[in-house]
Image (cartoon, rainbow, N blue to C red; front, side, top):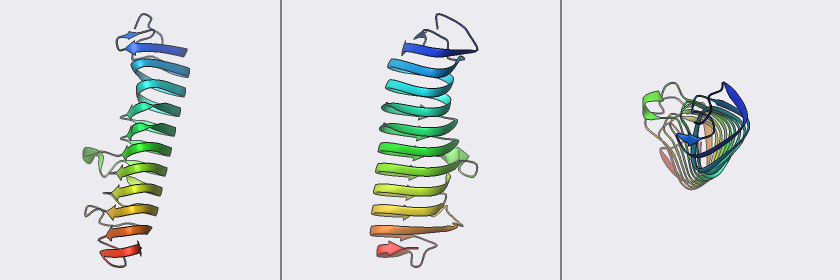
Length: 181
């Protein structure tokens, strides 16, 4: 970045390192990413073609939103990812929480609304979409055409599935049409 600071209320980024402030700077306010922006923390509105931040609190709205750390708020885009923790909502075509190497540590609560919703986190809330997949269990509801709770979900606290095809190894039945629990 052109400037180095601990925090800033405004950040403009073309593509790192071509941005006003360095990637280590926390943004509290508004960040505009012409192509892609990357900062340690963004609190507020984060928009552009693609966004990236270690920690997000607020609203990310772009084609692709990436967060390897914690998201508290809303991610709206074609692709939304939150690997460590997610509290809030992901709204887009493909929404993902958790990561394979964080399978026993990742937590997510809130809603995933999109075509494909995938969670490798300990998820509580709702997945609403065409395909809803949860590898680490879900406490809440899956509503979609295909709902699946994966084999690695050894224990799950209770999930109601409403859809055409419902797969749940620990459910009422491993597979059931229209609903499962």
